[in-house]
Amino acid sequence: MDMGTKEICKVSYFDSIKIRAEDINFFYGKKHALKDINLNILKNQVTAIIGPSGCGKTTFIRILNRMHELIPDALLTGRIFLDGQDILSSCIDPTEVRRRVGMVFQKPNPFPKSIFENVSYGLKVNGIRDKNFIEDKVVEALKKSALWDEVKDRLDDNALKLSGGQQQRLCIARCLAVKPEVILFDEPCASLDPISTAKIEELIVELKKNYTIIIVTHNMQQAARVSDYTAFFLLGELIEFGRTGDIFKSPQDKRTEDYITGRFG
Image (cartoon, rainbow, N blue to C red; front, top):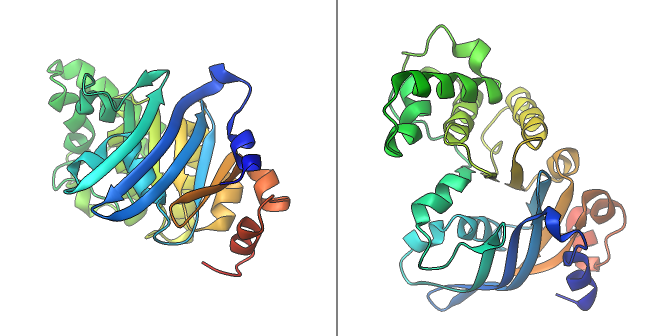
């Protein structure tokens, strides 16, 4: 990454930084998957991470909630700060990190349980037993995920009966129920039709009022529509980061321009 990119990453309004990645290097065995990543994620903004397949996008966001620790033979160096706290510290419980930093995956992954049980699952895992409290939080999460009106009369139905788009919004509701501060979206619309995709995009824009959002996407139009900031990854390196309008209209690195204009990737 050149000096120009490093300067872009050092935003001046420190209080707005929700997550700060410092000197992140990650290895799958001998494969060097991420190389010296320095990146600031701003509070209540949508940050898109773009780049061709295999460039380290998903690997990076998995590090943000310590899911990388589930990978055999993985090695990570560097630090990740969430509100100034080093969440990679051995003193920090990974479960608590994953509560604060939720994740929605590429393919909807509802449990083979009822709609209600799917959303309440995280609350119960965290030891909450008050039925009224759980019910309130389930309703609140379904409303925030723009799914309540479609399922309010069928909460006992198996979640697998929902459409693909509804299942993805259910997974978002399941994430929201435990009150995360950051939500990671790993290509959340990759398996959805255009109408469902539009609903998810509208939801992401609405959610940033209360959450910090990071979305990995291969869809350049989607990145332009929903994100405030964009980071371009290539071969494990952060090539460029800045406001989405600037990245798409006047990228500083020719590799960014070539990728955005479809010359490769």
